[in-house]
Length: 85
Image (cartoon, rainbow, N blue to C red; front, side, top):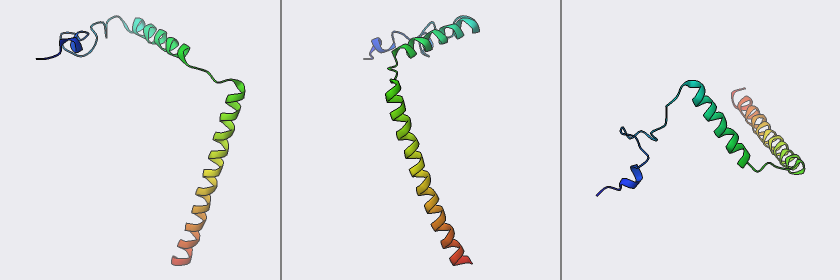
């Protein structure tokens, strides 16, 4: 037997909700914007202090990674020039 409860919100073609795709472009756009605003209200925004701390950590991490990559680049460049002259 199949579980009909899992398909209860699907349309006759089984492609999702029945009301999906209805309305003109502007009503669908307005619905999308309302949904985006509703989701953004659920976000826990960081305080200024947290934001500065997170930004500082990211900047230092990027600088460290750039230094490591630059070091590898220098070593490999010297190695290739030594081997191939």
